[in-house]
Length: 82
Image 1 (cartoon, rainbow, N blue to C red):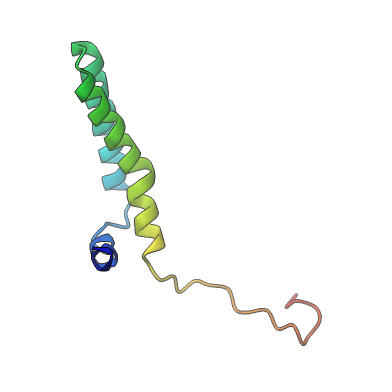
Image 2: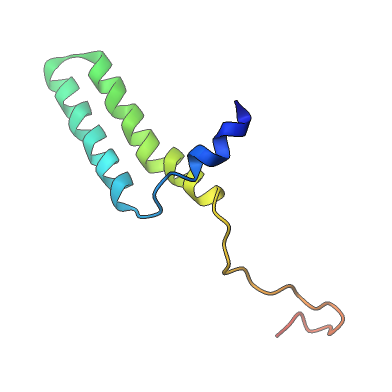
């Protein structure tokens, strides 16, 4: 099962728009759950907010290779590259 995580996480979008939409849908479902007093709708809304705000963006960020890494510090120069 752990072998499936990197390929599945690579499918996540890197644009913030889907995550914002997921959070807004979670808020709407949570509000609807409060209005109808359906605890399972409130829980589903909270879960969607959690997924859109934390888990999916974190997975998308962790699984990508960044080419914008700073160059390594040359310790032989003594000035830490400044």
